Structure formats: C-alpha cells, structure tokens
Length: 428
Ligand SMILES: NC(=O)c1ccc[n+]([C@@H]2O[C@H](COP(=O)([O-])OP(=O)(O)OC[C@H]3O[C@@H](n4cnc5c(N)ncnc54)[C@H](O)[C@@H]3O)[C@@H](O)[C@H]2O)c1
Image (cartoon, rainbow, N blue to C red; front, side):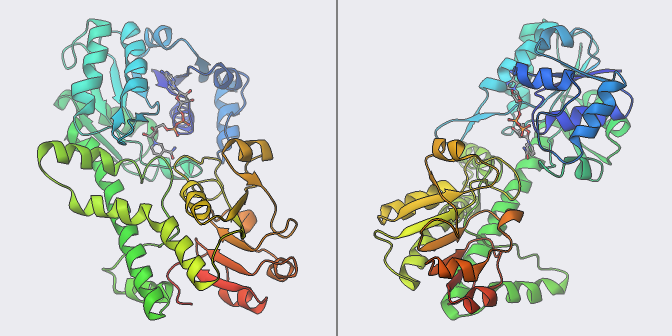
C-alpha cells in the first residue's frame, strides 16, 4: 500500500510515521524543503516525544521518505491524507487557500481508485463543497465514481501524538457510503485505533467542531465560576474537585485565557455558519467572549488587588499557548501584554522554548525573573521550567506580587516568601 501524507507538520509527520509503522510505504509531502530534507536524512524536524525514533526506524526500513513533489507522489498513491493548516479570515472564518493548493496538487496526480482523506479541521460542508471539487477539477475524476473521498478529523494534539493516536477513536465520514467504508477500513488497518464511521463528511466535520465548542463553553463556565469564587472568597479548585466527585459533573480548569490554533478558532466555523443560516450559537459566542476577556479581567484584578500598574515592571512567564510546546499562535501572552501596556506597565517576558531574538520578534522585551529588576510576575504558560521558582529570591530581588494564571504554584509557598498571591478562582 502506497500512502502519501500531504503536510508533514506537527500532526502530519507523526501520522505518516504511525502509518509507516503498520507496514505501508509512506511518502510525506511538504512545501518546506527543510522538512523534506530532515525526513530524508532520517531525522526529526520537530520536538515531539518519540518522533525521532519513529522517523529513524521507518526511514531506515525504507517505509518513510519525503518529497516536495506532491503531484508526483500522488501518481503512485493508493491513499492520500491531506493535513495542511488552514488560514483564517480576519473574521476568524476558515480560509481554504492552503487546503485548495494541496488538494489541487494531489488532484493533478491522483489515480483512479485512490482514497483521499482530509484531516484538517474545516467548516461543515467544506470537504464536499470546496475541497472535493478542487480535486475533481484538477484530476478530471469524479468523487464516488473514480475515487473515494472521506473526512477524518485529527483529534490528537501535539506532544501527545503517539500516545493518543491509537487510543483516540478515529472518526470517519464519506462522500458516499463506499467512501466512508474505504476510509474506515484504511484507518482500522493502519492506525490501530477504534474507528467510528459516522457516514457523512458533514457529520465527521461536525464531530470535531462540536468537541471544540464543548471545550470552549466549559472552560468559559469554569472561568465565570472562578470569577464568582474570587468575589465570595472561595477557592474554585476545591469546589470543583468536590463537585466533580458526583460522577456527573466535569468542571474544567479556569485560567488566564485560551490560546492556540484550535479552541479559540474552531468555534467560529460554526458561529459564522450559524449566523448565515439564522441559527445563532449563543452559548458558543458567549464562551468566546468570556474566554477572550480573561487576560484583561485578570490584569485588572492585579491592578486592583496590588497596585496601579502605571510604570510597574510586569514580567510574563511563557509565550507558548500550552505547556512545553513551542507554538505561540493566539497565545494569551499577546492580549496580556495589550492589557498591561494599556495601563502603562513595562512588560517583559521569558520563555525557555524561545531565544531572546524570537521573543523580541514576537514583540516582547526578554528578561529573566530572579535576575532582572521587576515588580510583578504573571504565570501565563505552565512550562515545566516554571514549576518551582525560588519565591524567596524573587522577593529579595524586589518582586512584590504574582498572578498565577495557570494554578501552577503553591499559594502558601508564595505568601510565605512575602509575595502577594493572586490566582484565578482564588479569593484574595
Ligand atoms: N497541532 C495540533 O495540535 C493539531 C491538533 C489537532 C488537529 N490539528 C489539525 O492539523 C492541521 C495541521 O496542523 P499541524 O500542527 O500539523 O500544522 P503545522 O503548521 O505543524 O504543519 C503543516 C505543514 O503543512 C505544510 N504545508 C503547507 N502548505 C502545504 C501544501 N500546499 N502542500 C504540502 N504541505 C504544505 C507546511 O509546510 C507544514 O510543514 C491543523 O490545521 C488542524 O486542523 C492540529
């Protein structure tokens, strides 16, 4: 079986490796020659646990190669998986530009009888209305008659890919019943995960988007309850732990905001389409507003509970949107900095995953807590490196307050060192 994975990114490359591991001959296709060269040298372009070994093993066994020539690779492919990113419009609706380009390159080489599976998250109807026609036009073939077409959302996340690929059920929907079955059979054989055939492309698209909205709405609920706990002097974390003990409640973690390319983005695919169809998604809209307001709300709390921020040196720990990854798209570091600068604070940032040049390029002045002079510190990303700061040393260096945006620190330890502790969901 010849499989090509178009988009050898943080998701596509581990997926290519997992499929190669099952015995298929896999070609990873990417427009970035540096990624292609790394794979063809048997090395990993990303820091994903286990990826080095997977690439080395499958490359050495001749089961994994890479190319920038997607069309050429598609000529020999029995199965094509497309997992390139999707850009967003200024309105955070989906921009199909990259998906179209990748689908067109595939279409130019696609052979009769192949299966094409899209895994990039798209709006409901996007595969049928936008992407399949691109392949049909470029190939002169007809979906359903000449090739199988399915959508199967990628539901695992970077840094946990190999751990999750086999245990996360693979949802598949097809252009028609035969396509859905072809997709389900492929994934069952080559991923080892349980497969859920939801029949249609649209159902499979909606599974992913519903999961994202569920998450965003529940984080918003946690954030609102956290604000209430702060107001009445209770500790959200104790309340949630006890509340979650009834086998029915699943209160999530509140925090200083939601970042990344998934949760703050995908709800808009349904929100925007709902607006067009006259089916307003009130809860999803409210959740987005609540979660987007977390940085501002917490900076305001800091200003009220501690001191006006004008002229204060406030240091942000973490540029990444999630612990121990180097991805800062829609990171809450950005709105935090906007909220701080709006109050005339002097903002600095540190993140062990980024060089000083990268931090500057992101619009921040690099600094180091415990070394450089600063007045307050905000924990934005719960990187392992930030787990156990020396609070006494911080105090000695002049830091007076911390805003623990990720419930990452022991409140008593902070207060024992003489610092003001502010935590999301925790009364002062
Ligand atoms: N990263 C995650 O945690 C995650 C989780 C679930 C789902 N996803 C889905 O996977 C998609 C891809 O995410 P990712 O993290 O792998 O992205 P990524 O940015 O790490 O990688 C995308 C790759 O696609 C390549 N590419 C761009 N245009 C191309 C083209 N025309 N032809 C071939 N290759 C092209 C890029 O060079 C890049 O290497 C996301 O859009 C999302 O829908 C991602």
